[in-house]
Amino acid sequence: PIADTASAIIETVVQAGSPLVGQRLFDVNLPHGVITAAVAHERQLDPEPELATLKVGDLIVVYAPERAVERTRRELSRR
Image (cartoon, helix red, strand yellow):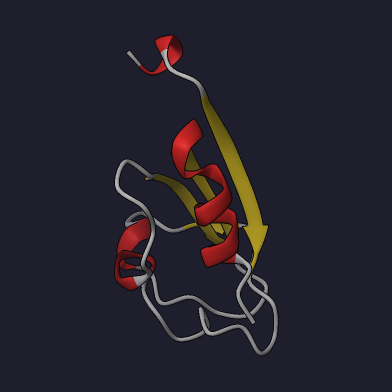
């Protein structure tokens, strides 16, 4: 179960100039075990967050196992 593992919920907002803009979260090189919780466009949750084309200002929420937290943060905050 998720509750039995060390993990983190990571939230980030897609910034202007980010290489994430125009990509689908599915195509971002996130570590194995990272689970997409949500992508919100203008305060509206996308029903298929991994397939959403990311835009400036989108909120991304993922669950990452402890071993993947730093790399996940790096991938989601690249400029």
